[in-house]
Image (cartoon, rainbow, N blue to C red):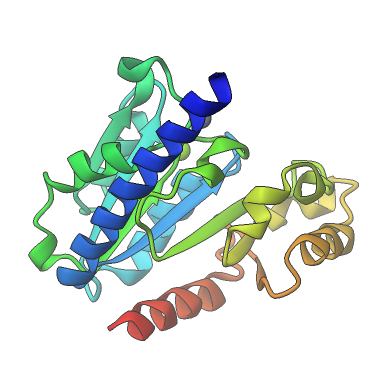
Length: 220
Ligand code: MG
Ligand code: ZN
């Protein structure tokens, strides 16, 4: 019985995701869904990314958290319009659904937007199960997490088009085997590019921004 209910929820979500994807295509907006565990540095990465691509690229940001508007307030300071979704009103859901994206996106002027970035709720599990109508999914994994995260949460890594290996400025202070992480990522998703990055030193940003711009161009 419970399985049936869960399947119905996913079917309804997929239907809404299809609707979103059509809308974003019609408005010529490229949509990226950024996912990771809490504390991997998504928001800081976004702040620095927006600093690099604005105003050439018109951006809008949707941020998901269970509570607080902290992340949206940080993003707004970059000059990009940002909408915070708090899932505590929906029982504290630990992911963003296609329906919540549809509602938030209706508050943006999509006509003038090139790129919509969704910072999903920090969680390596169910955000990967919910299509929100995005064009690409990017998983952020920081070097303060275990090397074997890709093996423990394979769906997230299977469903993503790019992995950003974040906080590499911390490597000198850690016993972290970055080669092992890459090996595990490749084991789950052989095709996936991995970019080593640091929002502090900005290492890897050229490569990341180039990847992003290429993907936006491909859609146009
Ligand atoms: Mg955040
Ligand atoms: Zn969830």
